[in-house]
Image (cartoon, rainbow, N blue to C red):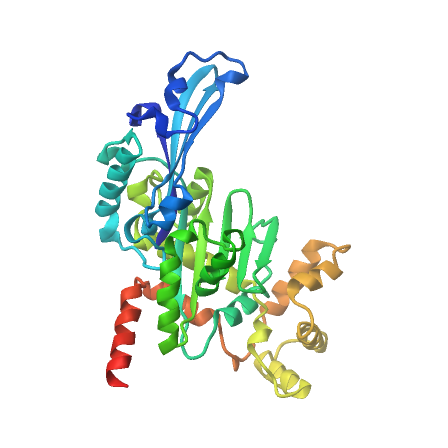
Length: 389
């Protein structure tokens, strides 16, 4: 439901009781600051690798001191993964009922880090970043790699103003990036495997915390082929959070408590999944037996189209057998982008039969059902399999 969260607290909302836990010590935070460069300073406290290896999870704290309109501000950002806070992993998914326990756990951990924050303050803290996520179990032989391969064929970079696309780990992860938000899809099991080689090669941060989880998953895979696709929508700026909420019909302050809701997570994930599906070449859902078969079905399903339109759709289908939409766009980069998008929208507006696997359907169904995925459920299945085999 929710993974990473960043809360931003003003000076009046927290108290430091152990300055030396920060690097550098926050004792200097309360020294008199001039308007010069010395007026800005940052103080950090992050979990160590040793703590993570020992199963100790803590949020990342960043305190800043700076002048804003000649007024000295002291702010603290609290960044943490909510499921890792409770479960020491983000395979197990949260539910609405977990909110109170998260607040209580976070309050206690912060106290151990030398920072006092009231329970009410944490619950109603302004939220500057939130990552909504869903782990999706793929069944019936469908693999994460197959879903990711098809998602890559969707042409969404222009529609959603992405300035960077990242395809990593031999096709096992996709990330679309802007300064304000990201969309990420990746093979959850493969990502854990990559982190055992190098933390830098993984999509997740702090994977060392959940290395034992990988061992448990490997044991589960002994019984059944476990395929877990993860989808994340990372809203990384407060303004973007507000914008997305407004587009979904919500009108309230983006606080921790207001945004910790299954309903909102579900709507955000479905909204962006629909945007991706909308810009996937629909004619790829149809796998004709021959060129004649494609044209025959196309003409029957679209009786009002001209010969030119039928041949354009046919030509587009043939080109996509060798190139994806990103590569095709690159070939035509000297031409008008608007011309490309008009052509794509036109071809996508035609009707096509679906006789191949629709990889969007199981992802969409899982998000619509939004049942929390728990490792213990897979372990129970494994025990039952061993019992009856």
